[in-house]
Image (cartoon, rainbow, N blue to C red; front, side, top):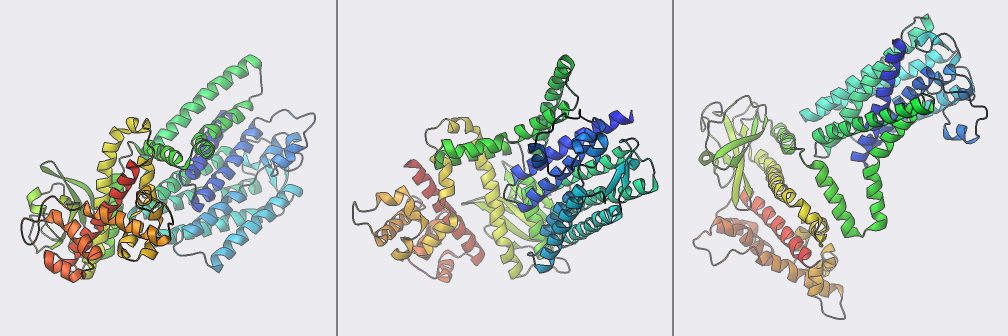
Length: 611
């Protein structure tokens, strides 16, 4: 019974460690923490693999090929000829803790200084020394006897206590790094994931003291207990890093993670069945289960990466970008992560101005929908849409709203172009009654981000309903254009609209829209700047509503065009524009940013129409 329990548990955790490592790296390929975590998980997976080979020693080869030691450099000489004792000594866990220590140092706030680099470098140097000592001497483990299912089957060598001390030391340093990172985190979601990583480190770190006392005192502790601690640590660490990376990148992995896990589980079950049938018919060694299923997990996990790599050889830039975007959208379908993203932003906003609570409320048909909250205990909103309709930010007096919103202090409306889509309500600040003007200015830009996120989510829902038609379209530029023209580039061009030399050096000169305005010959960068000026001016003109303003000041739908036209084309001072439109500085800035985004989108659509 102990044998089967040990085999099953080590096999499950081997598959989990390999898959989690590939999943984390494939979802965050440019994140160094993700790569270090992947190396940590794969190092622990190698330990599980060696345990399985020790429980089921493969037949001793009559002649070992010379390339085997090169392919598996961490196996000491004679491993394949020594039976189970050789496999148990074939891998030590020190590389895993050194990789993870490096990852926890990076997670600390601030840049890498000389002291942090010294600790990381010292860890790798000590790991290399221990590995070389283990490979060429008997100082770590002197010999083996007894039953491989128990920890006291390996007899410690002279430096084995030092080896365990290093494991404990780097585990403690990793715990300190994670704890300090959690204490300095300003967002609850990040702090929670860092605490989970600390728990995973502590659980896995318990293997050090157990591994020291069991062989030294000769206590027959089942080896599977070590596997359980490491396996639980692997699961918590892998899931924690995956979620932490997703949070810092502004995405969620809830359904993608579960979907991928179920798919890998079904693949594993299928290959196990096929391997078992083959083993029964052809009488092959049981060790084939391990390597075939392991290979299946690795190959199936790398399918998406392989496709993306092959795209570079078979498709041009536009089609490659379209295929990448389609895969990203397909992966995000059903994630329903808007609430998580909004809660993340709202928490940061409330923390920055020390608001007692916050609410994001959307207008849906004729009712209110609370989509995100921070430290809000109420269950119902005693408000109507009319109570929240505002043209600009409004400071609220006490009892402006019924309880439990009687202490609300600030209301920030959320606009999509000229239509209000909702509002954000902030409770009074801690140790205060009203927010300062500096606090209000601090909240305006993230409020625009929230409005953009909601608007983007609504557009994506419409886009996904037409996804199959888009995939069959002959024009891939509809997706690619969104990446070729950025808001920052358009804003820079508008700020320098009459500097033709500057405009001639902007990325906008690559647009086909601009090429249409160029003369047939003798094109200079000044001519290119004039063409950019004409294209941007044309896009701004498209913001002009039909007819003429019906009143003074003009209606709200005229604000984006008039602000951009007066500020950039006629070079009027901002204070004069605000006086002419009777608007506050906050409304002016938000409308100007919204107008620039609209101009950018129009340029994207106009460019896509020419492809």
